[in-house]
Image 1 (cartoon, rainbow, N blue to C red):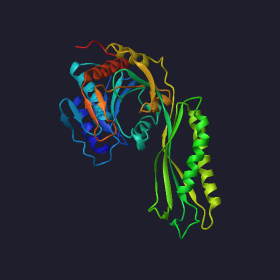
Image 2 (cartoon, helix red, strand yellow):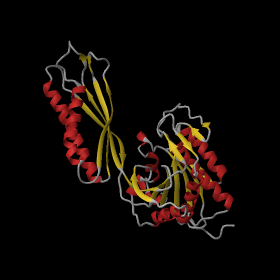
Image 3 (cartoon, rainbow, N blue to C red):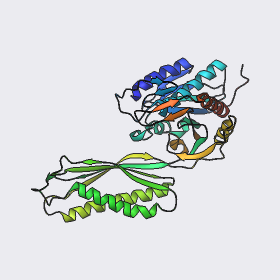
Image 4 (cartoon, rainbow, N blue to C red):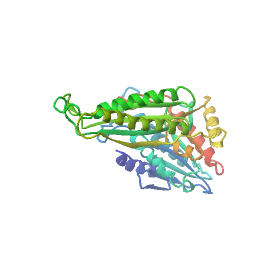
Length: 360
């Protein structure tokens, strides 16, 4: 889905007035609008991907004033804001001092693990000097701090067998159950005070029948924290619990080989504190105030995790309108004052990139 959306987004960037358009090695689609001086580069982006699998019908339907489609708000609307800002700059004859990169970013959601932004900032010296991301709803909330996370897929493996005939073999499901309980017992006191930290066993699976000892049981776990040290501490507790659960189950086996466990890291999003006094952040607050809204600064997990963790000025602003049912097939969006988010994005972008001369 990203590839097809990326091709269309590239066409729309060219139509909207980008000086050049290209797709990088991981699929990010970038439209460059050159500044008069070109001494800096500013990124304005939204993510191309959605949570829905390839083949999902994303046809947009209208019911009254409401648009329905999977991903219509998160983050198709963000892409619309990016394109409209570019088109407005062309039609109004707005020139800037800095270069501007208008970007459709891949891999923001779930297993994407921010791979698009990680690639954009693989060499910070060649990446944009500041980043504005369009994600989330409304005008008020501005994301300036990054919520870090680590995600794991843990698989306990054994020979498996009949629940009666092979009773006594080590059971992967039992080992996993022990490991989860041990993890929660150890992690609970560590998350009751100090920097906010969370953990969640979000998915579990394995086995073939109720009367079969599974040969494999797996789970996917999400761990988050506002603080890198706290995140690392909970990760260590998690690893120790997995090994201990494995050991305890193996100690109970009456026959057969011991179980093994595989711990695969499937997500790594860095945390970080943004500079709330940075010019970009202050400009975002000022641009929001122009529309009669008092901006609030907050923390979330977005594409800006990457630049924030690297110390690069970054902010995530809302896409406007009203979105409902995000990440569900019934996702929908209503254009309630949606133009204000576009105007705010344009104002902030031009303020950060520097207005070159007068607007015709």
